[in-house]
Length: 486
Ligand code: ADP
Ligand code: MG
Ligand code: ZN
Image (tube, rainbow, N blue to C red; front, side, top):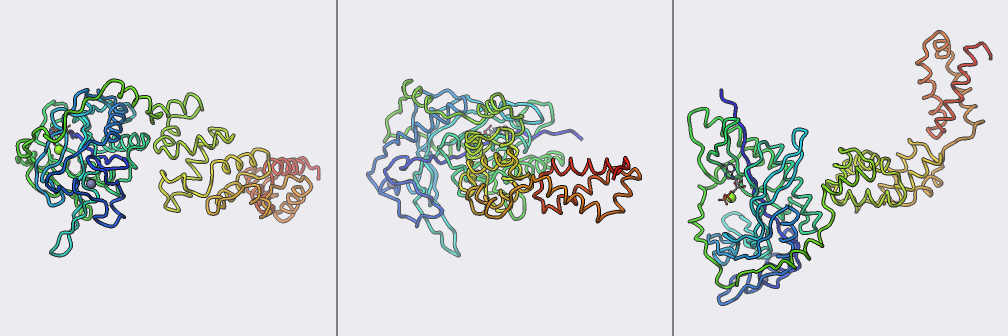
């Protein structure tokens, strides 16, 4: 059997977080919560005789995304009418860009199979979102709050070959959009949607076979599953002597399979032509330079800095920069005096564990009760020996649940570490006296049992004993017993 490889290009639709819509003054609202049709006007509901006006902020956000994706920003843009009929598209066409898009020929780097791969960005263009239909019984309900919300469509080259690569790309792109502040990244709300185009070919060949397009995926997980499914399905079609049809498909989450929606429309079907109600959009270099100056530090650059400046390894740095909120939390923690490696360990270890348990998304780390300052202070308490690492974990649990000041929590609960030698020595003696068998085994050569005895001492101290001092005392006592000095 021939070995096949996947060929995948992604189309990404990202709503832009502007205050108003793309071509009118209506406010952009959360279309999953706002009461339906409360943010509409004659323009976005397509009343006769209205005229669109381009949203300057949306163009600027588009330029910023283009620059972040290493694209050329076209000095000359033309808006085009893309005609198709859907009840949620009141004009009967969408204003988009076709032959003269905003951004072209960029790239994004992803990590795949232990190496770095550059994925080409074919173009990014501005358009407007449609409204939303909800089908109920025999009716379709329409909400036009979303109609006319600025949308940036980003199209990659077919440079991806596996579902894992597509996932890595999707995560990277989402993270860039969130860093730029142009999109919340919340795919479950539909503000960021992805459409994989998938074909397969014999491995090593350069041909491009017929592709299918899986529309409107609302999670990165669905992107991965749908691609895996399509690759497997198409290989079977070719292998059994059939032909893959060019179709649009949907992803059936419940059944875990792609389903054909309709045969694919071609550019001719859309009857593109220049939008007569809008003049060409000319973007001067000065505007591009100004937009470039507004770019924040992006994930790749931040990761490189966390490695070079803070001494983190590639893995930890990568985990921390994946979500801007996590990177910010980390930097606020080190800014409050915590040593970077310790901060990285605590955040990616214990803090993430508590967040997972509580069902808090990484991007919401800024909303948890534990503050970066409290985490830094907690680390300080461990460092100066006021509490041991075990207690620190308990204090962290309290901080996570209730917030507050670590020192006050330790004081209020009597969790301070006992470094008092007399108290620790007493605990050691008590444990040795209570466990003569273990002591005999130890003296008989089973030295590993010292570890168990140490555990008993810590238990005797209710976990609050200073482990270094306790270990020193225990070792000294055992050594003395071995040498016959009682
Ligand atoms: P359309 O807008 O009609 O969907 P495009 O030419 O803009 O068509 O391509 C859409 C996406 O499909 C791009 O991401 C591109 O990389 C990808 N693509 C094109 N040809 C193939 C193919 N044979 N296999 C997989 N992906 C493809
Ligand atoms: Mg397409
Ligand atoms: Zn409007």
